[in-house]
Amino acid sequence: MSRVPYTSTTNACKLCTPLGATLVFKGIEGGVPFLHGSQGCATYMRRYIISHFREPMDIASSALGEKHAVYGGGPNLKKGLLNVMKKYAPKLIGVASTCLTETIGDDVHMILNEFRKEFGDLDLPEIVHCSTPSYMGTHMEGWHRAVRAIVDQMVTEKAEAHHTVNILPSLISPADIRHLKELCSAFGIGSVILPDISETLDGATKDEYEPIPTGGTPISAIHAMSGSAGTIEFGRTLAGNESGGTSLQKRFGVPCHQVGIPIGIRESDTFFAALEAVSGVSMPREVGLERGRLVDAMVDGHKYVFGKRAIVYGEEDLVIGLTSFLAEIGVKPVLVATGARNVNLEEHIRTVCGDVLTEMPEVHEGVDFHDIAERSAQLAPDLLVGHSKGYRYAREWNVPLVRVGFPVHDRFGGQRLLHIGYRGAQTLLDRIVNVILEKKQADSPVGYGYL
Image (cartoon, rainbow, N blue to C red; front, side, top):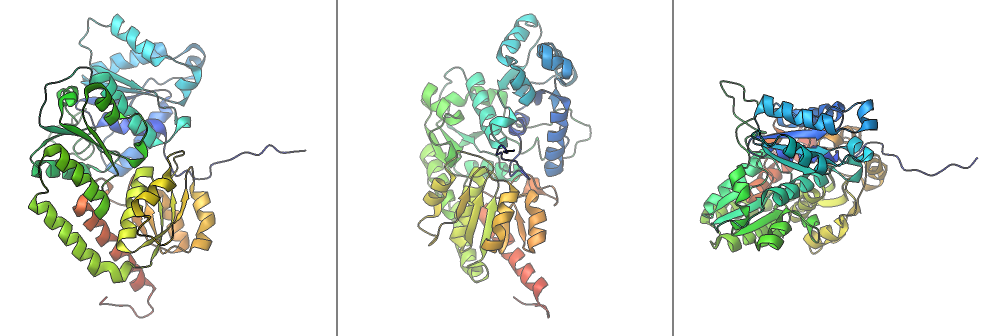
């Protein structure tokens, strides 16, 4: 009997699409993420988010069951929105669809219009909707879709011009977001960072529990994004695609600068050039000093890292930035992998480090960890660079894992890891050099006390 060929996923190198949208909605002032689907989806996502950020994470759900899969989930969605309004009094509810509701064909846009008409006498919050079934992409696709939905549905009029830069930062850490604010202040320009998870997912202890954490991108600032001096959008893979930044440019003439996530010297240089263009201010001395210290550290650490072989994996734009940085410090990326598909990853890797590397790494899209493991014996890596899901392989191959990205759920402080700018690259360099030195000490039969 003939068998039909199929492709299975053994250990995915990605997370689900609505999870990315959930993180975005959590980064809006007074925002509550709402999943239109089964309760299990919200439970799964809460587990991942809480283990990384170590913060409470409420995700509302329309909690559909078998009956709703047949008759539709509209009534549950409306009832769920009313419950969220009653319990949280949110300023925004971000509705993300899931596999179930997309498969049964719920017209969420129509249901939300009906809701606004039926309950128009109430003080309704902003309600933003985006389509995010997991079978259409990764958590980064959900992230970008949610950002685009917020811009399209909330920025509807041309605002008065103001000396502010919009930054659409992709999935970076709360520590990275705080650093972005510091950098904009150093350049003398205000910033609207969408989303801003610097407090909502890494907050301070309060005397009383807050159902919705303080912080997030202010609603008023979102409405005024059309009057900003420019937009800087992180993500080389967004080039040629509709995005939040291109939407503002097309509808309101706000200049959009699409750059890679600023990890390492050259990608950070590109970001700072864009910030100079928008702000009209040359690089401040303190930022230039950080660049100089980074270059000095790269010279000092070169002898420890040169020629080491690395496997890099994770979100597509993150691995592009990481690969560029590794090439700069003398590490040889031998395999670069992402769970996303159709993002031209090899082309972008060639662009950011083709003139530095004498040999291009293997580049894989739509990969899972089983595929990476199959190649490991031939590639003989010295270290892995990526999130915690690679730990089992690092342990099996007896090589260090430098934890970056999302999720980091087997170490403490993942939400406070700094990646971007010259300061972030300095932090990453120190971590990489130190895990290599630690491995050398551990493998030595006599031990070294001075390296």
